[in-house]
Image 1 (cartoon, rainbow, N blue to C red):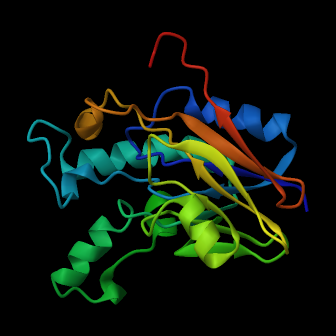
Image 2 (image 1 turned 90 degrees about the vertical axis):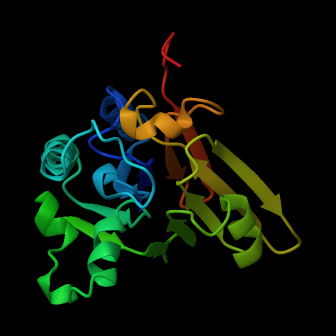
Image 3 (image 1 turned 135 degrees about the vertical axis):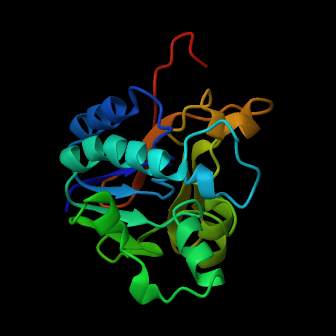
Length: 222
């Protein structure tokens, strides 16, 4: 098995320009042969449980723009594992709370025209012993220490790091991937003050033993 590229939260259609190209460079640089999207590939701002921008896209327009933006990712990475994030779940949660049977709800693959994308709650790679999850249950290092398994997470946009832990029996690590969210988009208004998003992707190399964070060069755009 080769190395695995890990793509941070995209929040389509609000993904930062150039982030796809950055991920492709990391894929090539580290000789990756598989890819995991760590969740929140969609933003679903129009349907958020928090306040939404009344001047933002309509529900249909945001979804159309998201599908269009993700089309480039699907074309580049036609086969991928996606750990479902809290933003990805929003529409399904609202259908559930409205009493809509899941038989009426289309799959992510169908909506996004991504037949080779496998959406899962979490992904444990048996060949490397690495756990991939979106990250709503604590930081990557907290989960790694608690579960005693090397862990990759997204969700925390301002965090991109690889943290190592060694004990008498093994070496473990926890890695936060960062994200690809454009902080200047109206959907990221909550992030205008405070820590800025860490625009990065990651690679799990050396058969799961080496976590690598790849920060995107932003120049003066930070």
